[in-house]
Length: 113
Length: 112
Image (tube, rainbow over all chains, first blue to last red; front, side, top):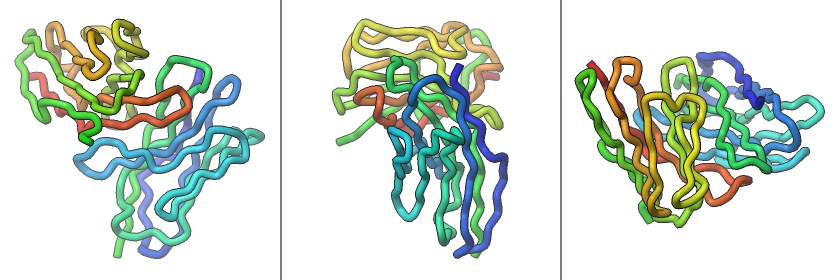
C-alpha cells in the first residue's frame, strides 16, 4: 500500500537559516504529492503540490521537487522566518484512485528569532 | 466563500454517549473525507465519500458512521463514544483526485 515517511522532528532553527524537511514515499504508479502546513490550533493548509515527476511545487518561498528516481519530495526554504513555525505534513494521493490522502507523521518546526 | 465548515469546535462527551460532528462545504466538491489526528500518528482516514449517496471506509472506521445525502454535507456520527476516540477531527473536501484537499478548522473531542 501507499505510505509516506517524514523526517522526525522537532526541528529548531534560527531565523534566516536554511530549511530541509525530508519526505520519501512508497506508492504504485504516479501519485500526486503535497506538503501541508498546520499552524497552532488551526486546520491543515495546502502549501504546495506536484503532480508528476520532475515537477517543482513552490509557494511562500518553500519549494519541493517530485523525484521519482529517489521517491522523494523534500521541502526546502532558503531563509526561514519565525512565522514559519508550524507542523509540516507530507502527503500523497494516487491519481487513479478514489482513495484519499496518505499522510506522513508530521514534522514540528520551531524558528527562533 | 466559507470553504469547509465544521461544528462544533470543541466537545466533551461521556463514555457511551453519541453525537454527530457536522461538516459542510460550499465549493461543490465531489470528494469529502473525515480524518482524525492524534499525537505522533499524523492524520488517519476514517471515512470518505466520492459523491452524494456514496461512502466508503478508511483506515480507522470502527465506531463511526457517515452518510452523504447532499453534495454539501458530510456528517460523522459517533455511535457510542469511547475514551480512545478522544482526538481532533478534521473534515476535508476536494475537487478531483489530482487536487489537494481543503480542510476545515477541526473539532477537538474529549471523551471522559
